[in-house]
Amino acid sequence: MSDAVVRTEEWRRFSGTLLGILIVATAYYASGRIGLLLSVEVDGAVVTPLWLPTGIAVAALLWFGPRMWPGIALGTFLAIEHLATFQIADAGIIVGNTLAPLCAYLLLRRVGFRAEIDRLRDGLALVFLGGLVPMMISASIGTGVLVATGDLAPGGFWPVWSAWWAGDAMGVLVLTPLLLVVPRVRMPQDAYRVAEAVGLTIAAGAVAFVATRSSLSLLFLVFPLLIWSAVRFQLAGSAPCVLLVSVVAISAATNSLGPFAGHTLFEVMVNLQALNGSAALTALLLSALVTEQNNIREEIERVCEDLAEVVERLAPHGPGD
Image (cartoon, rainbow, N blue to C red; front, side, top):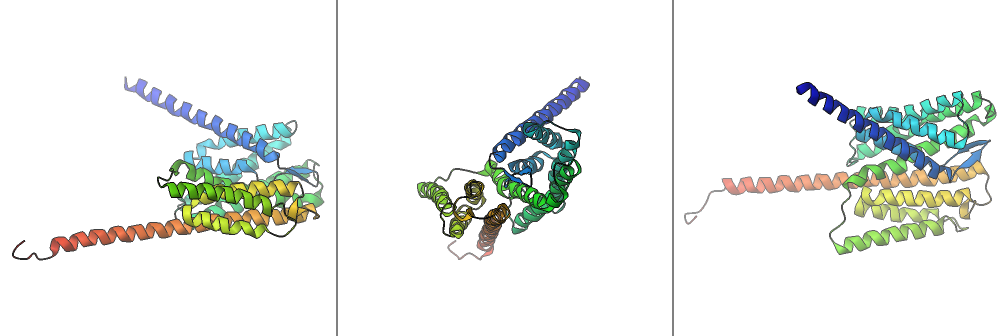
């Protein structure tokens, strides 16, 4: 009887893992299709300024552990198959796109990263150990495969590498915080807070649209809204705003609108990634800092209340007590 229970539990665990892998692969492929809608061509190679699948991959590994890696590999295969007929050499891209999130996961676990991102150190870890550093792996292997197969001239290695790396890193910085905070989001009970959140979302979308389509240099206007969202709502407010600003900015950049008009592709990519990177860093780090300070204040208040109770118990009572 116990053997049957063990086998049932093992089968349940296996089926759960298999379902998780399929969900990750589907989400990876679907988000890749969305990312390709905003793709650009750099020296004949198709790259996107915001590769959302990397954000999904890192979040999935943080949630469910490294056993989800086949889902990342399968999703990458489907994304490549969508672009062109799969070739043996493309297996290198699959390896790179799988290794990079795995490396991010291992580095984050190594430093004690908390998915709540409620400490400044968690925000810094996600930026550098989750995004900027490990995504060099996928960019290096992927661009190397293109050069080795003759699909990319050696002289185009660094432009494509930088675009590939920036797109993968932005996927982590922009999408992973949003995915990590979604399970913990609760609708505010205060009607004023709800109205403020709605107003913030509308204002962020409107300002981002105007700033990215005006011929004037108004991109800096998005930062007061990002600061507002981080201070008032922490990650639950700032993460959606960053994603909104990034998507609107990428749409303008890929269509050469507003401040992105009249520039070379390289200049457009530099300006775009400078905006996206600065927006993500501002929102993520400020949210983590505010959350950490709020937690410290609440802990101090809790300790003071406990201390007051102890003092009240120890205080001598008068004759009439």
